[in-house]
Length: 93
Image (cartoon, rainbow, N blue to C red; front, top):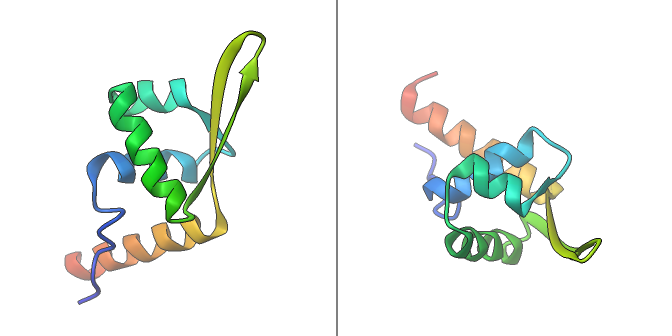
């Protein structure tokens, strides 16, 4: 059996990656609402995904408000697809 990527096996990180697989980019508030996570926890998990090279995180402003935009990288897409294939091997699909 294929080994499951421990970085993606976390519920919140997997949720973030699943969302980013389906959109071009997502801002922090959107990810926080969709994952129903706290700002602190989401921030920590985004840092882990960014450090692994799976997502990019761009911080800027929208008017006077801070805005954080996340998008998945080609490396992140590949890692996610490999994770899904590993899951399929456990399910005999």
